[in-house]
Image 1 (spheres, one colour):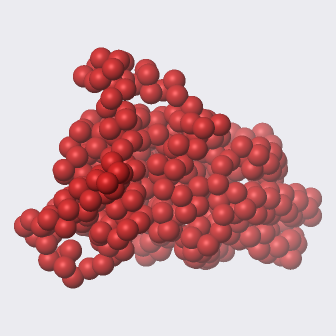
Image 2 (spheres, rainbow, N blue to C red):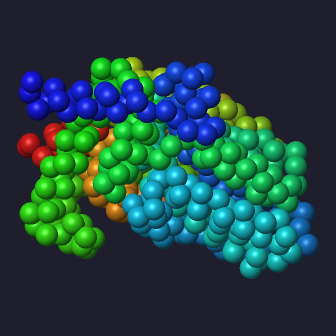
Length: 490
C-alpha cells in the first residue's frame, strides 16, 4: 500500500472514530455539513452586520445632530465624526491579524465584541463631542478587528463550491447592516440605535461561537493535528472530496514543519515570518489584494455610503433625500445578494471586468448629469432623476463585483502560514484607503464639485479593473491549497 493510501486511511479512521463532545453533537447529527459551514460563517456574518451599522451610522447620525441636538457641530467636526471610525479600522486590522494568528480565529471574534459594546455605550451616553468621537473610534476599531478573521474564518471553514457564495455574504452583511441602520434612523433617535447595536450583535456572536469549532487550518499551524481533523470533520463531514482536501492540508503542514525543523526556526516566530514572507506564495497574492482594495475604495463606494443624505440632496434636490437613501440601500442589499449568487456561478475575473467597467460608465454618467443639472441651476427634474437612475446602476455594478471581490480573494488567496499577518496588512491598507476617501470627500467636493470627484472615481475604477484583469488568477472551485501552490509554481 502506498504512503498516500496509508495517509488517507489514517485520516478516514480518525474521522470515523471522532465523536463530537458536549452541545455540538446534536448539531452534527441534525444538520448537514453545508448547514454547519453556514453556522460557522454566521459568526463573521453577524459581526459584519454590526459593522454595517458603524459604516451607515453617520449618514443618519449627523443630520439628527445638526437638526435636533443640545450641542452644535461644525462641518469639520462632522467630517471627523464620519471618518474617525475609518481611521480606527486600520490599527484594528493589524491587531486583529496578530490576535487571530496567535490565539485563533474564534478568540479574535470574541475579542472584537468588547470594543463594540464599549463604543456603542459611549455613544449612547454621550452629551458632547468627545464621547461621540471615542465611541466612533472604538466601534471603528472593532470593525478593523473583524477585517482579518472574518473572511479568513469563512475561507478556512467552507468547501470550495460554497466558499465564494459564503465569502460574498460579508459584503451583503455590510449592506444589510447599513440598510437596517438607515431605516431605523429614519424613525428612531440615534441613542436608541446605539443601544440596540451594543446588545443584540455581541449576544448573538457569543451564542454561535460557543457551538462552532476553531478553524482547522489554524489548528494545523499550531501543530494540533488531531484537533484539526476533528474540527474539519465537524465542518465538512467525511466525503471523498473532504478527505482528499484534509489530506492535502496535513501533507502541506508536514512539509512546512520539516522545513522549519531543518532551518531550526520552529520556535522563532520572527524567523519563520521572515522566511515565509520571501516566498511568492506570500507576496504575489498580497500585492494583488492590495490593488483590489485600492481600486474598490477609490471607486467611491464608501463616500456614497457615508454621505448618502448630502449626496442625495445634490442628486435629486432637497426634500427627497431620505426616500432616495432608502432606495439606494434596498438596491445595495439586493445587488449584494446577487453578488453571492454570481460568485458561485461566474468566474472571478469575468465578474471583475463586468463590474469594473459598469461601475466606471455609471459613475461617469452620474457626473455628466450632475454637471448639466448644475449648469441649468438645478431646474431640470429629468436630469435629477437620471442622476438617480445612474447612481442606482453604479451601486448595482460595484456591489456585484468590485466591492465583494477583495474580501473574497482575501479569504481565498493568502498563504496559510502567514494568513494572520498578511490579512492584517491587506485589511489595514483597505481601511487606510477607506479613511482617506471618506475624510477627503468633503474637501474634494468643495474644490472639484461632486461631479468632478465622481469623474476621478470613474477613471480609477476603469484603469484599476483593466490592470487587475491582467494579473488576477482564477480561484473559483479551487481548494485553498491548490490556489497557494499555484502562486509558488509560476
